[in-house]
Length: 410
Image 1: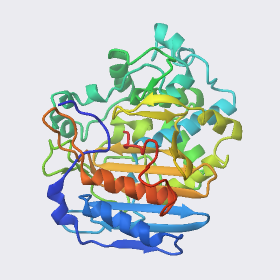
Image 2: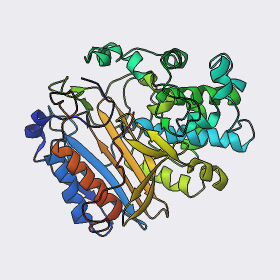
Image 3: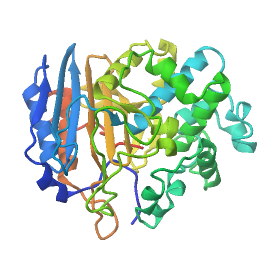
Image 4: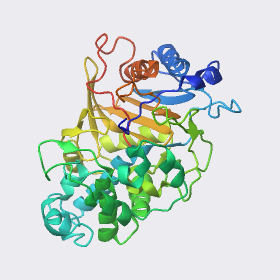
């Protein structure tokens, strides 16, 4: 079986433990709040232990939660919980890099070897530009299969082995650079790779003289006025949060809680903890030109086709996904997953409609005889929730979800 790192996998064993916890909402709510509540509950009934969300529509806000944060105690999820948001971190990192571009310390089309000749040496350092790292067209493969070698077996052993391991960015980058290339630098189609984002973290540190996480905190998170977002200082999440259950395509049955985990394995690529309220606030300000300049935002929204970790092709800019929803509009944002936790945050290009959704179970699909993840009722329920959150009832063409509803990338 080939392990594919996407936010899709299945656990029917949890369903009996979860069904029955109700939805929590907060006023004032936008039109369609009842449909949003129903869609959220449907995700829980389909087998998700806990799901929580915030939807904003033209100044009105709906917050809801359904299910449990702990399948053993039955503790309910709540809308304001902190959550590991995975690759949504990449938008924060990209914004920080673009701030340095605005100050003239980084040139988007300069070779990365000009800044980090020891880290990315030789021909690669001369061919790969900063822009290629930001839009995943560098051709550098992902380090995750090598940092978690049991995934190639497949076995969940590496997940436990690395729970409290402290990785250095340089050793993870070396794993990616030492693997067979995923493509030619600057090719017409990129290949999504977390290695790019650790290199960008090292670039930020090089040009600012400050650890990347500190720079992002001071110049992106604090500038956006986010009160519940930050890089974890240790393996535990501070503040109210859910347990985070990983099924790993049926290899972990019952799913295992990985809410306590050292996030050095993903750093400036996917380590952030946030809330759904903070994510909507961040993307709203970013797309309004209040985190980076309008010209920098225009660069971030120049997309190319990129092959995601689930094998689909997405439209990817500089740390931003573009998602076209028929009959509803164009949305920008990101999705993310780490072990046990998945999140998606999308904002319409006019800024008037936003959604952020979090779930506490990952890779819930059991494989079929050929090793491919089987379809699960959660897939349909999540798509319906996302469609309702983005468009409202009847807002999108019947039966037509987004061109690619993101599958939650680490």
